Image 1 (cartoon, rainbow, N blue to C red):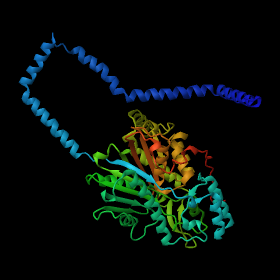
Image 2: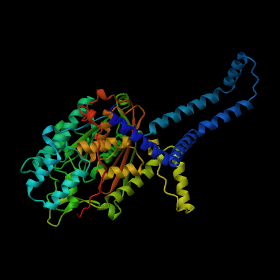
Image 3: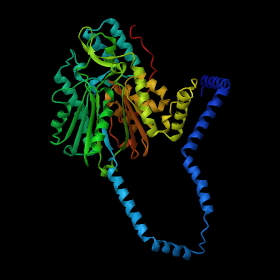
Length: 524
């Protein structure tokens, strides 16, 4: 170690010691509170077991059966069987009947066999420089709005290797119907081909098909496009969801789950994508220019099954899906809105109220999800805080935000933008490690709309973080306004060396540092 390095180290150490000594009382208090809460959590979670020990001791101490030998114990058992044989048979028959009734009436288990994310080729990569070059050459944006887009790109959290469809890269651009179909086929068929190769499932074995794409809805539909290309069977249950925004991927999962629970022994193929060829904004309204800077090309295909024989080879089991819709409120309904600007140019406008609306939708969603997943200790704290605030009217008590890290091992939060991720990290009290899949997906692939959650789960798998029994929370926001959640439990430990996903050839490069979001004035 050089003298200069040693001096810097000593200086840093001295500074740290000085800071630590200055904040020592606060530091000790925070550590104490942390361990007090941890102890409370373990006490409440294991309360039943702790109470059972003295209860069993009390029961054992109150029993005074005089059994002098093993022979006496055997004789006692024989006498009981002799005089209560009818009762034994009746109880056994009742238990068998009730057990059969329970197993026949409970919903079918839904397994995620595997999934695949589409990775475009190198020719479709778009750096910030290429983006700005194409923007300038179009000659339709004012200088102020070109500067605005440049600032958005620098603050967005997107990196230098995101993807655009060919129709928007070439000069002049060619956003026609044929090119939009070409983008849809490239993304959807690419993801499905990889998925079928991974699972070795034949296309004819798929009984349910659910496709979601918010802005591109041609006739015939995208689901019909898949049926035609893969020659799926004639009685397939196919659905095409449009106009449902970035959260439509989890709506598709929920719909497939409902169908799998009533249709026996079949597979459901879910395809989530967005098409931007015909949805690029060619005007100067800044609220609409934001989508040009954030949205990128991508898609995912997911194979679900209700076959018990697929338990061993499946990756995850679907535990919960929670859907929250705030569309009854006008502010929520219009915060993400496709419309025409003053020059009759169509675009998607993002309201300045978006963050507040997303926060309200999240609150409603986790209020429903919390009781299903949180330990009793967290639910008790939430309930007591609620009573103190609403019933006892103690205003200085802040609303208690449950610690979802006690319920989930991994978080896949829709990579809509850096500001959204920063806000959720703060509100849910998550760590940098928990947010890493979402931030790295935004950086590497951009906002791929409803498919972003699957790029995030693929990142987590590529890092070797998924272990058997781990719980993963997927959460997405979308126009309408909607907040949807899905909870998955890992059925096995995922070995990254055996995975084929869009991260594997470059996962060693991540994570990378992404600066924090700095708000930009929309009018400046």
